[in-house]
Length: 112
Image 1: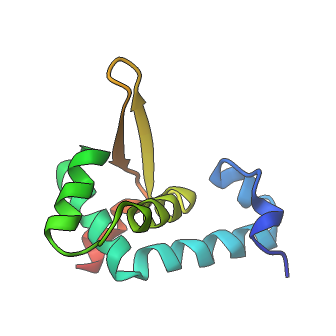
Image 2: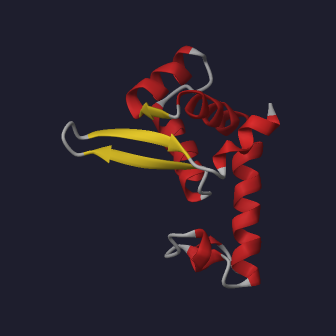
């Protein structure tokens, strides 16, 4: 069974879907992403506002006692991005990072 390193270079869902193993890996990744309580909360917050800055999202999560620190935030956000649930957008004028929900991430609307 392939592991995540076999798929490290894949950047789109289409690349994963070229093989059964890639599809299985992406499906497992997606299920882990949307079924984790912290990541569900992140998805809910981003879905509610559609687009949010990293700074604002981190503030809301720490104030709500969902996360303790930024490294925990980064780990969970990287997981959601890798599972195609959230996309990151860099505003080059302000050098600020924003997050948007993707169509795959909108599954949170049905999991509440």
